[in-house]
Amino acid sequence: MKSKIQPYLDLVSQNHNYRRLWLAQIISNFGDWFGILAVYAIIQQYSGSELLLGLIIVVKMLSLASFSPIAGYITDRFSRRRLMIWCDIIRGIIVLGFIFITSESLLWLAYLLIAIQMAFSAIFEPAKTSSIPNVTTPAELVNANILSAASWSIIFTTGMAVGGFATEWLGTDLVFLMNGFTYIFSSWFIYKADIPQKMMSAEEKHRTRNPLHGIQDGIKYLRTNKNVLRPTLAKGTFTMCVGALVYMLIIIAEDVLMMGSIGLGILYSARGIGTGLGPVLGRRVLKSESTWVKGMGFFMIIAGLMYALVSYSEHLFFMGMFVMLAHMASGSNWVMSTVLVQRRAPDQYRGRVFSLEWLLFTLAQSVSVTVAALILEFDILSLRETMALFSGLLVASGIFWLFKIAPAEEKEQRDQKLKKEAVSGFES
Image (cartoon, rainbow, N blue to C red; front, side, top):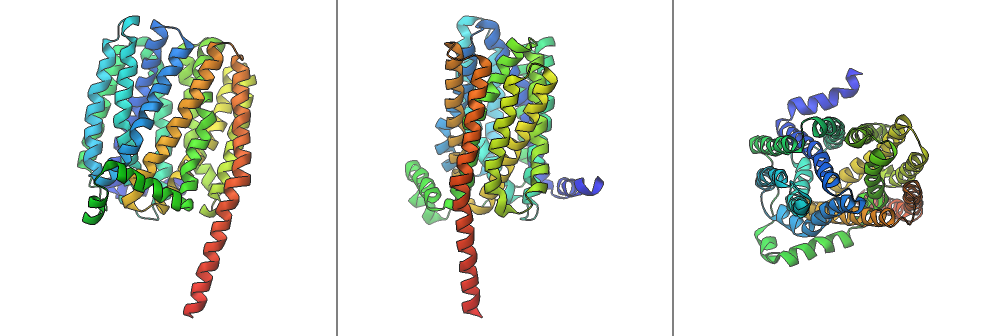
């Protein structure tokens, strides 16, 4: 057992800069998940509307999507370390504003604050993900991303579980106050880290001095580099259905399990456990990175089937188990697609690539949650029927990926291999 975790222990103990970036992620993620249940709680307390509950998720995702293109340009052009520090400080101040929501007439403030918070998250996330290859060696990169995903899942699990009880017992105001402090604490660890970055050349800075030109340059790079585009599309394709399914867990906890924040905390904890275990097990099954793109299609099918079982479950134990298995597949998809983009995209473009990935991811999630919320609000389908619908669509997406995206990846790998053999034969 010790030999299996030793590479991760060595990474954290010996790589000081990665450790500081990793600790910052842990602290800020805990605050995020600890606090989000309090946001859901005030929406339910003052409205009780399924549509308004879904709308907070949509606003969150649309804000990320709206700011993602310019965020990528900023993270490639300026110091990512400084950007992350300022994003943490500003978000720490913003979340305190939720304390002022004390009536239904002030609910609009929740949507405004979440939009501003996510605007700065749109800068922070690609900056952080783009920085991981710069504070690790190529040999450390996969372990670093697996550790980050596992840590996210542990923090998600504990943050959601603790957040559910804290919201119930301590009240939302204290939860928001604690959330604000986590951001400030996170910024301190980033401040202590040395994060190298290959900056744009003077010529490239001049050429992309207009932000629109810089964004277009990033889009053009993705269009002309299909080996980067394919893993960039993986998260968006996955969440096109999973976004709605995760949203419906909130309603299941409230209306089916009748357990409110505590039930949601348990289901989301199962989601977090799966997200952490998935990348570790997925790497053992798919040992070669050349099989990862094909594996993403299978992960979509597995997740869809598991959520289909959730839609027919009656008991918390079985729901939690199927949610965990679904997000083991989701977590594998997330880490593998992230590592492939990190390896394949050059540093000068990495911020824009990851921000465009966030754009696709957030738009897909926003659309799926909106559609699910409208279906439920107007009683077009029941909750279980809506879950079954999106589960089926996820299975269909996986089948499409296996027959359309994976063959293109395999063809490119064969072409590259033949090209290398030709060059090697010519040189000899």
